Length: 387
Image (cartoon, rainbow, N blue to C red; front, side):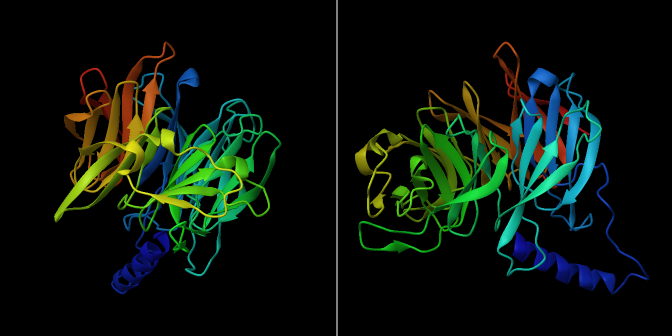
């Protein structure tokens, strides 16, 4: 998708540049918030890590940034440092022990490229190399990252669009990626030859992957590295346009939208995956529907063009990009209890959970406003905006 967007930006840039006298019409994003696409909170150290994907014409489309902000006052972040990166970075995994962050990146000016990168940042503020980063080659459209299974390996899993799920073992320091094949044959006789996945949730030894063309792929992570293993145990085929996905340790929550008996709905599905037990020595993938084996627990309708989901102890927060709102779902009642106006085109989410375990705030990245809205969980209202 980002390669198509890049092509459109290039065409628009060429048209606009015809009116310019000289030089570039684009401004450098600098230290600005510029399409905030991912955030991660480190409460123990009062830090907020921010990815600025910068997919907008307002700034130089080739440039993004990674920022660290001081949130000693969580309602008033203060920028500590910003470093330029390629644009189109994805999610963040923070390793607080080694003081590193891992950020998949999808930037490419060539639609035929088959590789992208994992950016590894040094976030040790006592280091002379604070916020320097190295590059590790990954598969095309590396985007979502989730850690850790197995825990001993501190294995992080990264989604790609090449029909494979990749992993790196952080504990060993060897970041050469391993691959799990996602293209597969179904027990119905069909095949999945396109397995572009973009979001991931890990529950025990299973990964639940949102597939761009529809459906949720359920992968047995213990099959990684086993020659000839069919790692995709199940394919939940009737989930339309899945996007953000999360788990509370029991249920899987999937954001999506699609046709429901002639009506176009935007939804969060609550799924009980307990019947989808991991398989060994299977030769194909079992296709199931949400109506099978009491898999579907609830359907909760949300706002226009829903994207990401964040779970707290009490609620699920969902960004509605075309409504400029966040839907709040009570996890017990499984109903929307609030719809909160935020900035323009909200996308990313991060949780500020205090050291005493109390969920305090949700940070919302607004990609058109280039701002972060801060939602107070107690009142379910926006109490601050950065910058």
